Length: 125
Image 1 (cartoon, rainbow, N blue to C red):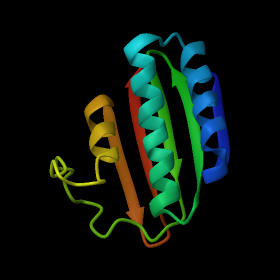
Image 2 (tube, rainbow, N blue to C red; image 1 turned 180 degrees about the vertical axis):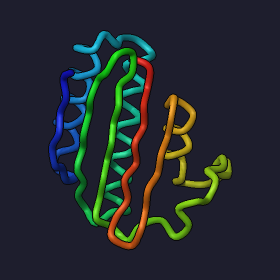
Image 3 (cartoon, helix red, strand yellow; image 1 turned 90 degrees about the vertical axis):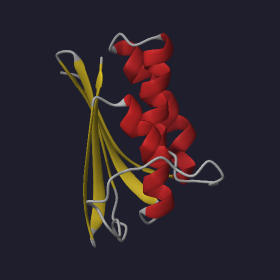
């Protein structure tokens, strides 16, 4: 079972995106499925940097027919981790990242407390 695990900061985002694309391609993704996978992981990593203290940790794995991604951070956590994700207002300048991930992932699990947040998604692969 191939996997990638690494820490990242804002400066690492371009290389991280390339690494995620290579990982997805190696697992047989292409076209729209590859684009969705890379975009979803990028959104999670960006959120960890923006809202989680400026850094995060990425885990990517593949098992059977699914890709699994977990991004963790050490930020202050969600104000309401049980809150249902709703579509952002059409005029909002942000708030689309997790909404996008929720709509392209097979599963989305968010665990958050004052010591950090962990977001895990599975996607067909």
